[in-house]
Image (cartoon, rainbow, N blue to C red; front, side):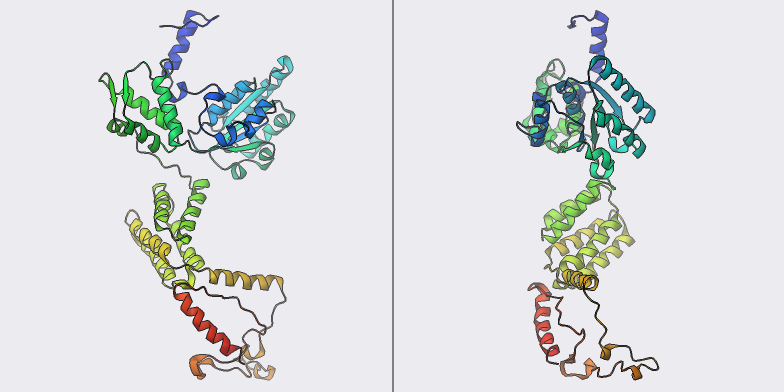
Length: 444
């Protein structure tokens, strides 16, 4: 059936329907109203900031920061509708300064002629260079355009600070499985834009699978649903778990080696090991490996952690981490994943101490902030001619000549205690030794 819109010719309506049929399901099912938008309730819920800005008609420039398929483009289109603005879209990947200036000039003419503002949506705005981003500033400041930028990279690092300071930053989270299910069910029921004209029997485990495997990416989930339906010859369509699995490509792990994923996942790995959770640590390690992280980077972080967070609570941690680093360099992937797994689980289960980390930090702070201590005369180098006449080395007691190997003498000149062993692992034994050593030293 051809639906004829008022004021449209038969040809125009047919052309519109043909274009719509060519669109993928995710594009056809894009909501046009804020009430139909799914997810991101932390800033879109009733009483939240973005909804308040729309209600007060004070929508300024915003930057949407989040993963693919979380709704950045859709939300930009809805904002244009809600703010009664003309919608204009540019891609920072394919557009240059010339394209940008043409849009800004047109927006200024529209505002002057009819009073209608333009909402300029720039996808992947972080890919604009500094000159291109700076070209936006005058018109953003004057309110000629309402800028909505979308980026998958942290705008505080990837976007000019001048532009960030003039924009509200909203971070979009991956859609939850329940959100994805809502979108899938909506597509299954919609007869005009979705797949409702097909007779589909959707298995619950198939729906659960699509909602989980898409990693919060609505486009990916809807694409898999559409592939499964359109590639099925049987009627009615039995959409089973097997069909769902066959309709999903091997997922590409979202992992930018120079962006947030790199730093956030590395942080999660280190904090999980520090927190003595080998299972979480293995997950984040696997995430880094699947994302193609540099093995040498992982090894360096483990060597650092062995001293920073395990320290003398387990003196074997550092040699093991160093050995793992050499083994990974020698073996390479895929086999070195076994070495990394061994190192990560050992470090996670090892007793933890940051006493050495705290000690060197305090000692260096004293060097920077307090008066430098002179080297005590009896500790100074006495091996060059004339050192004796300066009194260097006089009174020094050779520790190996003393009972127990500890000489009762002052090695610093002031009373300081930087190293405070914890009562865990081997460091507990060091603490008992150090207590006796310090008692002997202070008896001098």
